[in-house]
Image (cartoon, rainbow, N blue to C red; front, side, top):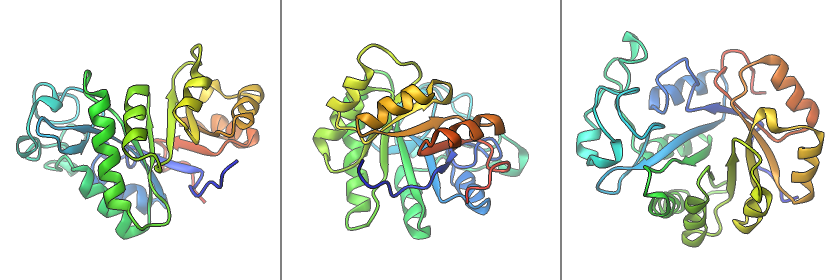
Length: 244
């Protein structure tokens, strides 16, 4: 197994559900709860700017309409990404990936970047995100971990910046998933937490892969994963789990 520099506890989309997901406000709140590693979703604007958002469409988490990837960054940057959550966060903007990356570097935080492409832009998103990550983290000790459910995105990231660590996201253990992780030269697999048991943990370890889980919001589930010796726990409940 290669050395693993990342903390076990990872704040999902910044601070889980306590603040508007994938915003700088959420990252700040997660940090206030003691978290040192964060997960976020990154996609591309129509003019190729990486920015944070989970959904393909804008309606759930902003006051915008339509597909986020169809709009240029100067329009996306004007959207309100906080009012949907609560009045306290009204006016919170969508962050660019560059903004979040600089925040993490300035504060010594670690980052798990989920490459979340607009459908049809899997390879292009993987390439651009990897190139931006390499540029921003160049010369630092611990690079970000690039993950995705989309093998095409991870393949493009590997071709663009092979030195950056990668992880394959899995919601099921589909035929060939372990081989796919090896072909992509992944250092980790990130599974729905229910997929981990003694057998799957042993399988991953036998392949030299680290074991991470999403999204763990119950104490019993976290205790089970700790007992299994898994390497990373991604949670919304930054108020429940003390990351130390």
